Length: 464
Image (tube, rainbow, N blue to C red; front, top):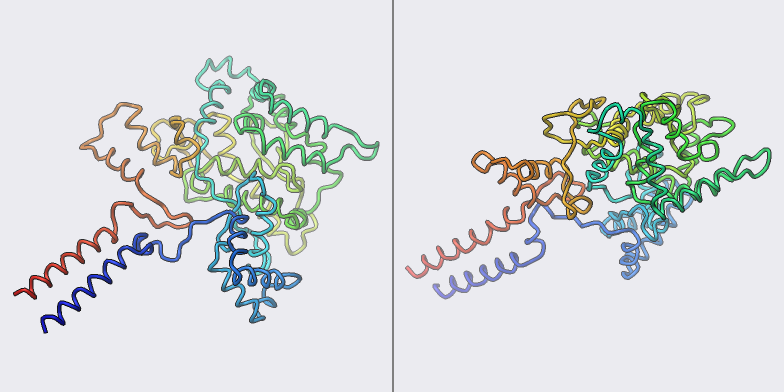
C-alpha cells in the first residue's frame, strides 16, 4: 500500500513539473488563446509553409471573390476555411505604414477581413499596428520654433508656417521632395486640365511618408496669428491640384471610391481608429494619443480622401475632404456623420492646436497650457529620454509619472510614487486587451510553491 502511494505521488509530481515547464503555463492563464501579431507578409509566408493553412487560404479567397458574406458562410467549405484561418497568424496580422511591402501587406489583410463583416461598416478596424509612441520630442521642438515662452510681441509677429518652410529647405531630403511635389502639382497639362492629379498625389505621398515628422508636421500644423500665415498653411499641399475640383462629390460616394483602393481604404480606417472623438478621455482622442491622430491625418494626404483646411481663418481650425452631403437622399444622416468626423472633430482640433502650441497631454497636469475643446486640462509633457521617446510601448501618463519625480527632484511620500512608477514600467499589457500581467507576479509564481508545499506534506504523511 505504501509503495502504491509512493508511485502515485511520484507520478503526480512528474505531471506537475511538466505542466509548470510548458509554455502555456509560463504565459499564465490570461494569455490563453492570445498570439502576438505579425505583419501580414510574414503571416502569409508562415501560412504558405503549412499545407492545411495554404489550401484553406486559397479556398477562402475563392469564396470571397464576387460573393457577399451570407453567401460565403452558406458554403460549408468556406466555413471550414474560415475556421482554420481564424487560428492562424493571418487572422491577427497587421501592417506598418511605410513598410517596404505595404501594399502587398494590405492586400493580404483585406483579402481576409473584407468578407468577415456584416455589410458595409461605418467604422472599419485599422489594418495598421497601433501607435504606442508619443511625439514629446517633436512637440518640444515645435514649442521652440513657434516661440512658445519667448517674447509675446515677437512671437505674435512671427509667421510660423513660413519658418517651417525655411526649416524644410535646410534639410536636403525635405527640400528635394518638397520641390518635387511643388513642381509636379503646379505643372499645367492643358487649358482645361490644371495638373496631373494622380502624379501630384503620388509626389505628396512620397513627401509625407519619407520626410521626418518634425518637418512635415510643422508645415501642416503650424500655429497662426494672422490670415497670411493661415493661408500659407492651407496652401501647403497645393490644394488647387491635390484637393479642389470643379464640383464637390457626395461624401459617401467619395468614401466608396476610396474603399476600392487598399491603400486609401486603410488610411481612412486608420484615421477613424486614431482620431474618432472619444468623450471618455482627457483630450477627446483615443488613448489620449495626439501622435496617432496627427499621423493618421497626414497619412490620408495624396489619396482621393485628401483633407485640408477649408479656409484661411487663423483662429478656427476646420478641415474637411473635398465633398458635401448634397444629394445624399435617405443617407443624409450617415453622410453628415461621416463629414462631422472631419469638420467638427474635437480630437483632431485639439491635436492640431497642441502641436502648434508645442504641448502634449499630461494626465496629471498642474499648469494647463491651453484649453482643449472637450478636455480642458492639458499641459506640456517633459521631453523623454532618447531610448523611450519613440520605441516605448508605454503611455505618456506612465512616463510622466516617473519623470516628474526624477526631473523635478521631488521626494515621494514614503516612496509611494516611485514604487508605482516601477510597477508601471514593469507591467506588460496585452495588445488589444485591457488585461495586465506583471512579469514577476501572478499565478505562475504561486503554483510552484503551492505544489511543492503539497508534495512535502504528502511525503511527511506517508513517512508517518
